[in-house]
Picture 1: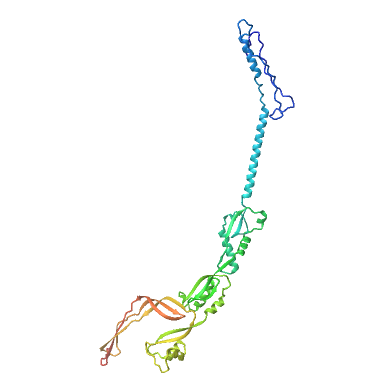
Picture 2: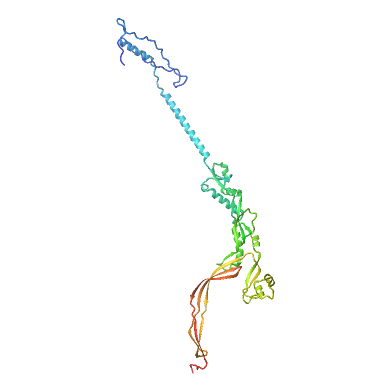
Length: 412
């Protein structure tokens, strides 16, 4: 610090405000403002006039600097302890906010996470399935299939049903008490019990006429085998019922028929007219006897009398009672038959009677025949050869026989 000019006093030290003991140093409304001494009014310096007793130029500058120093506010002392406390408070508030946010996020996760699968039947909630490793792989289609199988077993064996509701699985947060008794078997049983369903039945038609309604395809096929088994001429025969037809229908279960009722309706006889072509040697009574009908009825139906004589080619209508079901059996058979050899005989008048000269022994042949046989209610109606193969050719037997009576025996 530079020294003042000679004859002048040094500048006073700056006044420091001291806070009394017991008063807070932090910022607030109760803090006392530092006091300062009032500034003294200093008259402006007079200009130097010639001949007057004036101050020197250095003294005037010194006084001006002293006045400006007195007007300058007292510098405040930095409060490091108060600043550190403010930072600590801000850090505490920030940490408390982080803890609150983490707690809110945890509560939201617990509330929105799913611990069960709610089973809905259309818009109605049926129950819950515990969400575990096994049920995570399930879907609504699998649950519906299991419930339909359970319901089908309750309705009847081998019965196909069609349900009217749709199963949905929705992940939810369920109470623990609702999951204690929630087993998979119980839920499937409950879902199947809530189903409203229709049975996919099989209606039996014969020649377009609806005869009976069976609850399953297996029962309908059982009735068909009941009527075709007596006419199964061989193991490889294809047996069908003429006019037989199965149609899938939807039933509510009230119009289903039992097996005995269906067999009774089908095991009846209906009237049929058979057109017979008269062959050579036929008689009216012989035709009636061969077809098992009354001769008088046959004559009446054809407008004939007992004195009428049938001619080959005439058509006679025979009214018979046939079974309601006509079973057609078709079988393809392969058989082997012998081809007989032919015997060729020549006569020689130079040979004595009784002498035989065999030129060729001959042999029988063999052939394989594949044919189709068609039966109607066990009666053979047509036979068709599909293939014929010669396995061994037949050879003729050639003989020469003597016819002379005067030829002497060779031993004489």
